Image 1: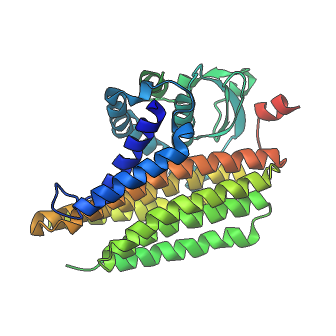
Image 2 (image 1 turned 135 degrees about the vertical axis):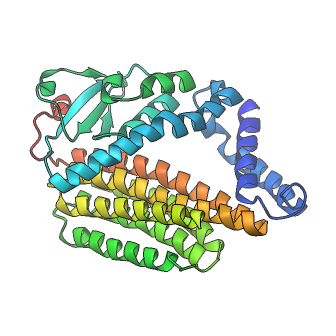
Length: 175
Length: 85
Length: 118
């Protein structure tokens, strides 16, 4: 029952965001709201198993959801800007020293690993290539390894980020 | 006020053609799939710019749907290249 | 006008990074390094083009108070978010598929994934 309700609310919110500005009941018209509720119930009936598959409802807490935009607009944006200046420098000069390294994360939840992998992909010089299913280690392709870094067996996740400690933020949101 | 949306869209279309060069010469299938992915991203940007240039909000809805559908197609091409399909 | 200048600056930044991404796609030696250029630079560039559209829509709404510009802003934000998430995930999928199909990273000094597979 709880997965059904959560999925329906989620679908309804997305429908209402997409149709905002259509009428005069708030910013929605009455027909859009009725259609949204009907479609949200149908969607929840079909997909209730997928959204809450892990069986814990930690992410339904609005405070954690509120932290996600703060994370994206704050430390993440700084790192992404630095990443793009770095990529611009590498494209123009062409000096690279690539390699695939193993990164320990220690994250347990699917959402946490998803956010960490995406953050790694969009930040300086690194993209996630694969994941070890048992230990949840990430394999990261690094475009410019520092001298001597290839001899390490694996490195901890926060060593990848220079300015802000993104893994700590992700732990605060998703763990 | 000058209209700068259409020139911007034109520059992005030229970039799409440059990405199509990699689609043409790319030595491995993965390179070609990557070029298609780039073309999809740039197409979404062009659709957003055209939506403003012609004052048609429906273009931006098309851009959202295009982004999500091209994502699914890229995932399936990746599964095929990786030999899981 | 000041908003016009800001919109133009965002647009130029967006096009510049898109151009760098495509240049990297043509210039780098193998599929993984090309992926660095396309994923980061074209996502950032497209998000900045969307940001230019958002600021432009905001200035139009400020002038006319027409609710259709609110729709324009919200839909552009959703398109940019969809782009940012799907781009990162599809690049993971492509990188994993490329490594599974046996493409070795060129000029690589270390390949831990290849060692783990063996």
